[in-house]
Every structure is written in C-alpha cells, then in structure tokens.
Image 1 (cartoon, helix red, strand yellow):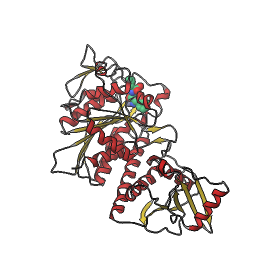
Image 2 (tube, helix red, strand yellow):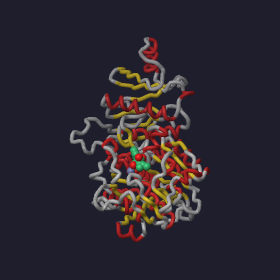
Image 3 (cartoon, rainbow, N blue to C red):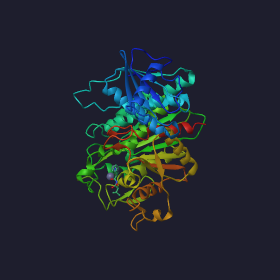
Image 4 (cartoon, protein in one colour):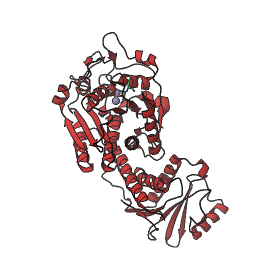
Length: 481
Ligand code: BES
Ligand code: ZN
Ligand code: ZN
C-alpha cells in the first residue's frame, strides 16, 4: 500500500469525506452536499457519529462519514470513524482511495493520525492463511489543500507509528511454535539493522554469568532456550541521560507446574506483548531519528513443564543478590522482569525505567479490556507517560502504592515471594518496585487487558492490538532535550 499526501483528489479514486455539524459550507463539493441533504430529508441519513453514506454520482463513488457534533467528538471517536469507513471501503473492494482531511485540531496532527490509523485499520495477519484475502489497497491519497514541510513530516511520523503498531502486532500474533526466543532475537537483529539501532543477543552462558538466575529458572523447563535481547539507540550522544525500556518476553506461558486451565492456555502466545511493544517502539524511535538515548531489554523465554522446570518451593538468587521464594510458577513474568530491571540499571546504566508487561489477569478484572493498569514511583515522569498515552490513544489508569502492599510480598524464608495476593495487579508491581535501585523514576505498565482482544473492539480487529509501542515512542519523544 502506498500512502501519499496530495493537494487535490484523484478523480479516478473513490473519495472519503468526513462531515460534522460545523463543517464549512464549501468542504463538500456541491453535488455531494445536495445528495446528502436529500438523504437527510428522506430520513435515510442522520448526522450522527459513525453514520456512513455511500453516494454514487455518474461513475464516481463517495463515502461520507459523519463525525456528529464536533463539541462531543473525542480523538478516539475520530479514529474509530476512520476505521469503520475503511472497513466499508474494503467491503466495496476499492483498490484506491482519496481521504480528504477534515478540519479538526491541528492539520499536522490530523494528518499524522490518519496515516497511523490507515495501518492500524488495515492490519491483517494473513501469513498463515493459504487463501489470501482477495482485496488490498494499492494507493491511498491523504488530501489536504495546505501541504508544507510540517504536514509532510507529520505524514512521515504517522507512517512510522503505523508501522510500529503493525510490527508489534505481527510479533504477538505469530504463533509460539514459530516465535520462540531465538526467533525473536533474529527478528530484532533484522529490525535493528534496518531501522538503525544496535542489538546484542546474549545466550544462556552469558545470562548465567550475569547471575540472572531468576530469569533462568523461568526458562529452565523449555527446549526453546532463552535469549537476552538488548537494543541500544543513542540519538543524543552529548547527553548522558538514558531512558530504559523493559518488555516482558514470554513467548508462551503455560503456567509451568502451576498449569493454567485450558481456557487460560489459549492465547498465551501473547505473553510477549510487552517485548513486542518495546521492539516496535525502538523501530519507530530509530526511524524517526529522535534525539534521545534509549536502551531496551527483553529477557525472552518460554514457561514450560518438564523435569527441568522450576517449581513452587524453589528459592531463587536473583541478579540483584536478593532472594525470592517461588510460590507459584505462573507468576513467572515478574521473575524474568526483576533480573532484566537489575541488568538494565547495573549494566546499561539507564536513569529512568519503563517496564511493560502482560503481567496479571487481575489487571483486566480491575479495569476491563479498555485500558492498561499503571503504577509509578515518580509523579513527573508518570505525567509524561500519561500525556504520551493520550497522544497515542492508548488508555492507562494509575493505581496507588500503599505501604501495606509491600508487606504482602515478604516471607520468612527469603527476601521476597513472587505472589502477594490481592490486589494482584498492584502487588505484582510492588514486587518489581523492590528491584528498582536508587529511587530511579520508574513506570510499570500492565498491558494484560489490552495487548490481545478476543473480539473486535474500537478500531482493533480480533487478536493482537500492538498496544504500547506508540506510547513508548511518544514518551521517548517527550524526553528529548
Ligand atoms: N501471563 C499471565 C498474565 C495474563 C493473564 C496475561 C491473562 C494475559 C491474560 C501471568 O504470567 C500470570 O499467569 N499471572 C497470574 C499471576 C498469579 C499466579 C498470581 C495470574 O494473573 O493469574
Ligand atoms: Zn503466568
Ligand atoms: Zn505470563
């Protein structure tokens, strides 16, 4: 699919217009406006959000999408309206399309958003279908009468973010028999080379030398051996500050000896959604050449059952030196993350950390499948993430750390235990917090509710959503000096 920013509509293409209660009189061509008015008079079209009219004039087809009352329109609504319109265009098997940019907030922002949404809306994981879909777009023109450098740059950035979402989703959708830790490492190396960041892959020997025994315990049961994936991007070499990302990279989570029930096993390929988000973000950050330093770490592995698996009752000595009693092998993500957090602080010297993980089922029970649950030890840093998540249209909701929770992860026979009871999403976060050193600003993003959807929701089709990659990019952008 080719996307281009153009001044005028291509008359050979069908055209998509957005209207709202305050559309300027000259926005719609007069013959289309007449038809719309006729439809409204006949009560066959209402100026309500998401309503779509298909209008044929001679051999030309126009889709007119209503955004309803502009005063009530939220950013999310506009994105969903665009998604629905594109779905309609796909139904009609249009191969090309003009998308006329409506007058909303800033022109550049709207262009950026449309470009990103084209990717998000048209994403289709068809690699393993032998019968490929008959339809795909060849060319989409984004039509704006005003095109300057700012608008061109907005298009470029929007495309970069769309691609970041797509790669994240593709990684999550790829089945676990294909995407094991070794394969993830290979893909990251390829992405790093292409987009411009450094990649180091560490195998078991090196991981053991680093003392990452908590991570190795989780990896112990699988014939698919672990890979520690390190991505480094230095876009501001004068600056010593380094932003750190840690992504949970369980290529499959069976639960281990604390085996998940059948219903919980299906979709657990998505347990590397945090890793995928971090990888997508690194691709975008490097492609956009942001002037910021970012190091990202993924402790990739699989949580399997075998005679070499770790068990409930095991006591693990983590890279930090602290000990952890494993009370439940299904609370494995946090055991990989704590070593990754120690590694990124001690070996990569990052100043701030964001960890992103499909960490707990409790997160979804708290907030539903519409937002990520977040926890942080730093209000200022968190505010930046909050703003980034608004720009990305990836919702978050912050939970508190009350000191009582910190007691819940303690035990007599080791420094900590890996489960802390209710509230599960917070006690998991507090467990990670115990490994954050020197009061570094830290944000934890539990994306278990949103990384993967069982059915279409908003502008995401069923399956992986790519959630998180764009927020991490926007955060890195806001950290530029
Ligand atoms: N990967 C799961 C969390 C998860 C659950 C992600 C549902 C997506 C959807 C995690 O490793 C896990 O199993 N957590 C346990 C923790 C429990 C043992 C304290 C959970 O949420 O049940
Ligand atoms: Zn688990
Ligand atoms: Zn897990």
